[in-house]
Length: 93
Image 1 (cartoon, rainbow, N blue to C red):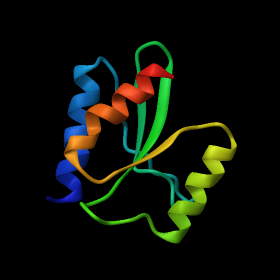
Image 2: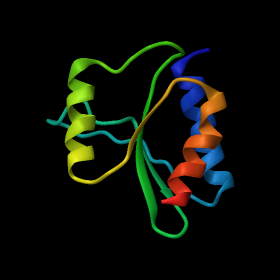
Image 3: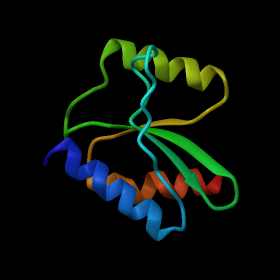
């Protein structure tokens, strides 16, 4: 399965829950997660999408840690089957 397929499924599942998941492009600040997830009730997290079995690059890991230190949740998604659990967790926080 390709990363793009997983990413599109994430976007669709977020929409089904009444939210949005815009692509995050940050010129001059490489390594940011792929998607920002906004769900009803002020629930927010960032999601890095990877092809099955792939891991974030070192710069991405560094950015994830930075955001986590600032108090934000960052998830790494590498399988469609994980989408529901990730979204449930985002909505429960």
